[in-house]
Image 1 (cartoon, rainbow, N blue to C red):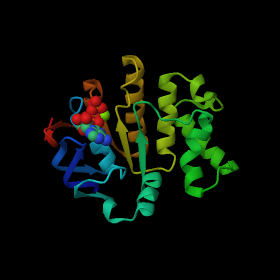
Image 2 (spheres, rainbow, N blue to C red):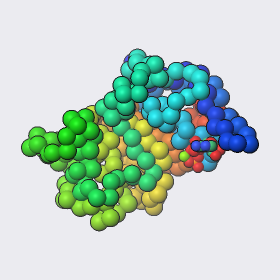
Image 3 (cartoon, helix red, strand yellow):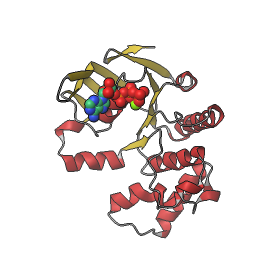
Image 4 (cartoon, rainbow, N blue to C red):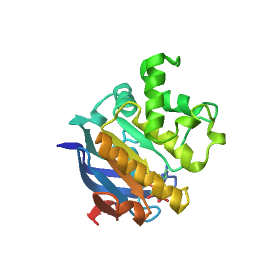
Length: 227
Ligand SMILES: Nc1ncnc2c1ncn2[C@@H]1O[C@H](COP(=O)(O)OP(=O)(O)OP(=O)(O)O)[C@@H](O)[C@H]1O
Ligand SMILES: [Mg+2]
């Protein structure tokens, strides 16, 4: 079954002087549980594409369907609900909240969903399980500055999976890590995919990441071409 479908996406940026066409009629289909790498040079539009796929950035034209629901036909409120509940995001620079401990960062999507930032015993148990999945239970109360880059990325991955999304979008998840740590992060993503069956779309420069995915697609001239 197709979980994510993008149809004829166009996206450009306009500043005062000129218009930059970044995405030019792009199509993509991702099946349930599939791992897809999107590879392309800097400036090719990979982050832009991920934002469009994840309901963050409205395309100029085209449609994005997540589990059959048209993301940009929804109102903003429904779309942010989908973003929080149904999609996980992992970024190059982790984007953890510096004042929160690892466990509270992981629980953030649950706090948002419930509109309440008190930890219940059930939530705590779920958060601990998520940290266990990424091999970090012994760092639960550490703040981000007390964690290594690889550990921070593990927290970010646990957070992305907290609401059990069927789709996880990763933007250069190993881009800020040395190759050994990056390697362990990609192995973790693949192990989680095997265990829980979420689909992963991973934007990367890193060929080592691309070869671990079931499919690698190149982004070139604003569209995707087979790898
Ligand atoms: N908010 C913006 N306003 C204007 N131009 C933008 C904006 N965001 C991105 N661009 C331009 O769009 C193009 C694609 O940017 P994008 O960040 O998607 O590339 P990328 O493939 O993710 O690059 P990298 O590998 O360096 O992260 C670039 O030429 C960039 O300058
Ligand atoms: Mg980018």
